[in-house]
Image 1 (cartoon, rainbow, N blue to C red):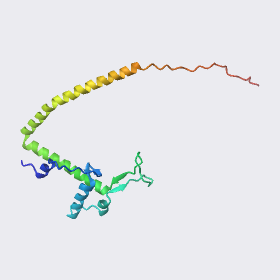
Image 2: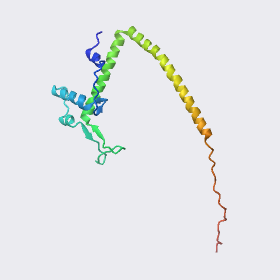
Image 3: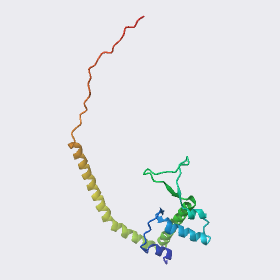
Image 4: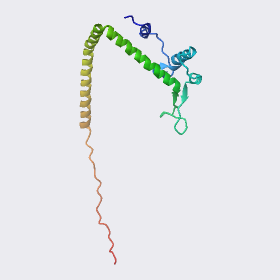
Length: 174
């Protein structure tokens, strides 16, 4: 089986690191907008021009007021038409990766099983070391917690006592 070029291209580092708003961990301004403008251009999509022209919108509360985050910044969201289309691309991308892997598993079952076994064996010492380090760290944390708890002076609860007085009762007149 020849590996498709689109799969080979996914495995080549390109060195670019966009710094803008991300949607599905991919830059909105330098990747998604040019891509969807191109797909609109050739007729593969029909995203509304306002979705591409103003892809970020203010978030609003149910009462119509602008929504703010806990830090006081206004909340922005990607316009629904664009978000739905990006989700579809993501789902199709995942399906393509799964299809490719399934095809390799089908066509090269023995070689694939061999790769899985090689990876499992290579990972065993790493997993064992991590497990031992975690067990050690948990034991040390437990020892520290016990030492701190036993070192703290026991707080004694002092009950405030006040003199007991008999309630004043007035004679009931008939």
